[in-house]
Length: 473
Ligand code: UDP
Ligand code: UDP
Image (cartoon, rainbow, N blue to C red; front, side):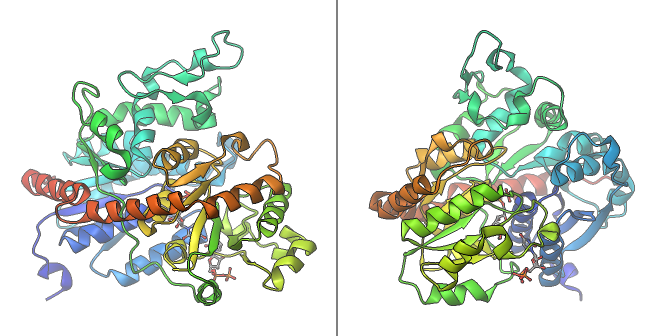
């Protein structure tokens, strides 16, 4: 008897993420949690991927979970000349949206029939017409914060015109009806451009489509975003929106391959003494900023592990480390003065979970925030793009990190090494940050227990899926 036919549950869900490790990783973790609950899972992955990191993660996931059925959505050709963006991840996302028209034969080839489809929030407007046509329940998986969800679902209803430079009104916060206002400066910048752009129009479309989805799953937990989750589930506030079910923080899974090199170095460092520095999977810093950051880390005198990235897409990031960080910094760090600089993919969650790690200088991609929380590591937030300022505000509000707002998004002005050194030192000295990060870690783990909010959220989802028992054959 195959592993699949031995499964007790009759629930069968298909998961469909969009491009980038920031989306793929939580989807793979969700798949792992569903498999652990005896759910049959089909995983739809767009092919090809943008980055090597994604294709490697998919291969190692499918090798570790043979009971999960892989399905490839082979993408239509990328037409760079008609693309509205030069960001490779957004360009890929644009093509995934266009390629959703290829979903009907793919969905009908899935056997046994699906109970539901779980779609990335940024694909819902492209996928919903397909799932509705075949009578398939469609859930959204929102891979960012609940706070970002409030902006996502209301952006199409609010006027940002007033906040635009030169409007005369100069409002600096956007009032979201019945929800906490969000400062305009925290918005993902493409949303504030007057002219149309792909990100803005797709967020508007997806925000509108959210109300037609059967439920919204979020990788967060009540202990971290209590008020926002309550408001999102208050029918008087978000009338028409399906329930927002917190199921996070989704824990790292064992298919995420270990990398031994920095761990060997970390093993020689005192407990809680090392700051981990990383800006995620798709943020390339300017050369000038990289040099200042290196200078700041060395000046701080604090031990560090720093992942340097000079190109957005990993396969293009081929320059040698010394060419990127410069000879002086190479010399300063090569003698193992106080740090380890690498230019490769590390298993971040494994690094964050190492006892030597005592702080995280992060861009605040939502997965990075949830991983820091999971491991109880205090943060120095330095948001760079997209939703990251909104996420940084949550880190600050929870008291588990510092956010120096004057640094901006790290794109316009170069932040000087002296300032970086000061903030890094401040984070490592602050015992109250550490204590709160440890308490938040405990809250995260409690949330995922059978009686915790997120554990109950997952159980409620499974109950709903098995009641629906939807079949589209
Ligand atoms: N990540 C990793 N190693 C790296 C860079 C990133 O394991 O060298 C993982 C990280 O742990 C997280 C994901 O890639 O799970 C990045 O997602 P996040 O939301 O933090 O940021 P993004 O990369 O989307 O900006
Ligand atoms: N890699 C990645 N994302 C990155 C950097 C690297 O996926 O941000 C790839 C890298 O190209 C390499 C693979 O991950 O092929 C394994 O990296 P490893 O840690 O073994 O180091 P490397 O081979 O790059 O020295």
